Amino acid sequence: MSVSPGPQEPPAAADPSSQSATLVSVPGAPAEGAEFTVRALVGGCLIGSLLAISNVYMGLKTGWWESGSIMAAMLGFSGLSALSRRSGGAPNVLETNLVQTAASSMGAMPAAAGLLGTLPALALMGVSVPAWSVVVWGVSLGVIGVLATHLLRRRLLVEEALAFPTGVATAEVVTAMHKAGRVQQPGRARALVGAGLGSMVLTWLRDVLAWVPGMVESPGRLAGLPAATFSWGFGWNPLMLGIGIIVGLPMGLSLLLGAVLAWGVIAPTLVDRGVVAASGGYEAFAAWLTWPGVGMMVGSAIISLAMQARSLLGAVRDLRALGGLGEGLSRRMIGVGLAACGLVLVLGNQVFGLSLLHMLLVLALVLPLCAVCGRAAGQMDVAPVGQMGQIAQAASGALFQGSPALNVAAGSVVAGAVAQTGVSLWSLKAGHLLGASPSRQLHAQLLGVLIGAAVGVPAYLVLVNTYGLGSKVLPVPTAHQFRAVAELATQGLSGLPPYAAGAAAIGFGVGAALTLASRGKLARFIPSAVAVGLGFILPAYYAVTIATGALLAALVRRVRPQDLGQHLPALGAGTIAGESLMGLTIAALRSLGVIPS
Image (cartoon, rainbow, N blue to C red):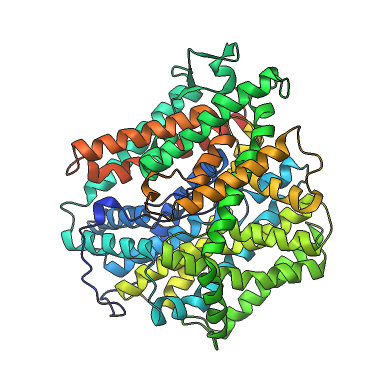
């Protein structure tokens, strides 16, 4: 499984339970059996719908989102195997791979459409965007990102054969499942489904029947006030526990460290000095704490990009080496890509108010930054989506004067396209190892783009219309990051809360220092700057719950590694999907008046 350690940055870590798997396919060797089948496409779309909904729900709450390749492969194999008992015969490797290809493309669409960052940021700025335009905007950027991926495919996957560890792990899981047949692997699927059902029941008991409290408040006191004033406690949130299981103990503890600094030290000090009124609640504290938190994440991003100078130079070579059409790309597909660029130009001008020259500049950045993102995904297994969007924001702010909202819209073009790049390349790497057809994977990815937008946008609208943005229920940390960068790029330090500018500068320095130190000999002891920064923005009980999930998973892996440990990724994914589905269902029922708000 792979979960982003920061807003809109999906890295990938190989599924721990798949490390012993051995590929039986030779890279590039054709596999036997039909590939582009109806059942594979339908299965991919069903699983992708689950991923898209989960990513909308999880991304709005925490800023993390899941690339989903390994989970989709496991569910696809189990579902196709069950279906084969009635008709169609047993699934083959290529069908399972096509399932994860379509599903992961759908899972990336909430980020590509800006539902997790730029759209909420615009909403917080008072900018309303029509739903139809969000769908068209997201599909256009998703298509551009997928086609850019296939332009880069030969250079990165074939000629240089970059590692793309998540793609390799996905191929290993697919190969191992088909090699073991139906005897061992369905256990993971049962663990995922069981965790999902349990998560759904708990969410209903908590949010509808109120039999389970949303948060168990901390009994302590800070600055003479109950600790719960500063959002301290433990949440009965299966989704948070699942995130902790997947991201691991270092990331969970880093998030908790950020919460301790922000909500245990700084927030009480702000109350003591009269900077923030305790009666303002989470929103009042978050308006101030966002700045040092974002400063930490931006400092980390800039140092990370500086360390990727070779990737930047490599991206130039990638573009020079394109020469002709990418493998699997026809002239018709190039026409589709140009049409998508045209739609982005028109929507950027008519809906977001960007000038045509401004839009042309941002579009010119897309392919080079997709190349940087793809190379980072191949070399380090991290797709720096947020950083690429911030580069576009910085360029936009330097060359064009305008409101912060225009700056956010400009950043969304690059962030949306590159959101598909890393995920698509991980899928293509798996397909390359398994002998899949790039052109068939391309068509599956484009189908995923279309259906992912159709699923993700309604899910977003239901959640936002029911709960609102920027609250404890939907903190939207990624939106705060886009908004803060836009305001700095266009307005400088004016308008910041008292003392927030200095805090942001200190956060920037701390983030840069932590990122530099993470490349040294003591890297294993250095907290993640991005996770610490997130701890400043999320409610404290989010961090406590996520860290608890990470700690429990670490204990299980130590005590029962052979039996329970191998099912932890599936358990984590199941709890995330279960609460996401039930949370969306409850929001829809409340919006329709079926259950009280």
